[in-house]
Amino acid sequence: MKFFIDTANLEQIKEAQDLGILDGVTTNPSLMAKEGITGQQNILDHYVNICEISDGDVSAEVISTDFEGMVREGEILAALHPNIVVKIPMVKDGIKALKYFSDKGIKTNCTLIFTAGQALLAAKAGATYVSPFIGRLDDIGYDGMELIAQIRAIFDNYMFETEILAASVRNTMHVIRCAEVGSDVMTGPLSSILGLLKHPLTESGLAQFLADHAKGNK
Ligand code: E4P
Image 1 (tube, rainbow, N blue to C red):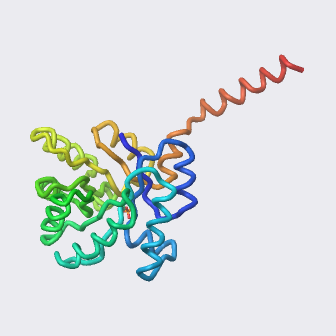
Image 2: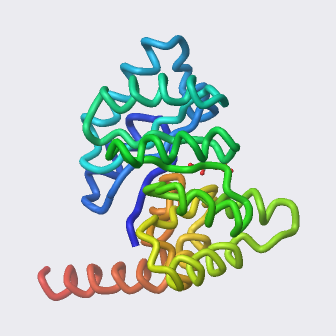
Image 3: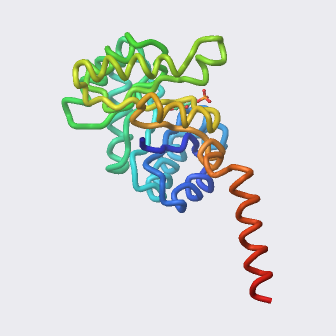
């Protein structure tokens, strides 16, 4: 499973990149605003900064919701750096835009996926990634992971090349469950990745090894 980090924070992207396990980055307009990145040129510059840190795909989201606007914005974003993936919302014109970019060989990520039907439609339009939001489904009493499993079954039935990018990952258990059900990618906060490191027996075991070594080498 590929690991993407879901943030526009350059320090956190660098920390994950330095670990050597980062495959890409996802952003959205809320994450950009959280970092105080506003104004079109600043936003474009920030995407370039992210691409200079990460070796992998970097999702950059369009703001338009009409076909012409999405194409215009997406072309500007895609020209910024070869790693840019144009992130398109799951709306009717978005499907047309996914097909347009797919035909031009530009990578896309269809965002705000909450049903298997939406994922199927995006895959039919040639999306590179679909982003089912598991945390937001869990928040309202649905099982986000069940959606990932359902999309996995559908994509496998028809050998769609579209990758499942589990988004709205909130914690380490989400990451593990994504791997269990066969998500191609998960995108989560740095804390959800670093949580994979932790176990109290690892910590106490290491403390014991180091103490025993110190005793024997006095
Ligand atoms: C990813 O592409 C999404 O923008 C993101 O994962 C949403 O996460 P949230 O539900 O925690 O805001």
